[in-house]
Length: 174
Image (tube, rainbow, N blue to C red; front, side, top):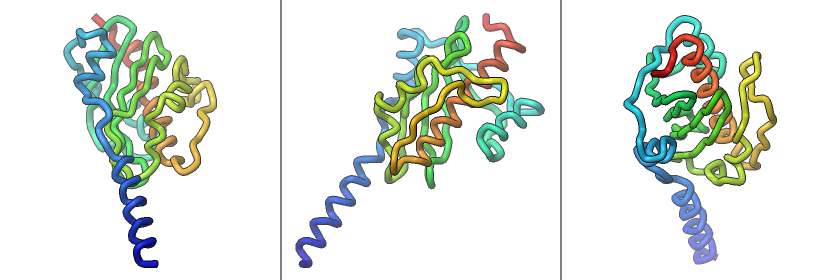
């Protein structure tokens, strides 16, 4: 009995350890997003209307006063973080011409819910846009056991789309 219990505990702890990890370095993500030639980073300040919209999208006050992004022509790339259940999930988001081009989990720190890193989940976001109510124009199917991770990625997709719109309306990309 003790041997069986020990084996079960070892298997459970191994699956938890497998969920956590760095799946792609941010530098690699940016090189991929801009075909090997990322532009220099820029900053968007989270103040006034932008801060209020960011808070509404995230459901809490943003932790930062500014966010770094990379932009060229109609494409922007964002490396953002949001808490899943207890720990931040680092996500890379590429927006092109106001639509999500890709979303990728870069670093996952939670003990479960890492299914959100797989293409079967992230490909749902491809081509998504933001409505006037700041929600995605499509339903993103959840994953049983990964609800909080799904919510985190959906929030970050919405935030990147909103910030991209903000950049398009107030700052012409060089």
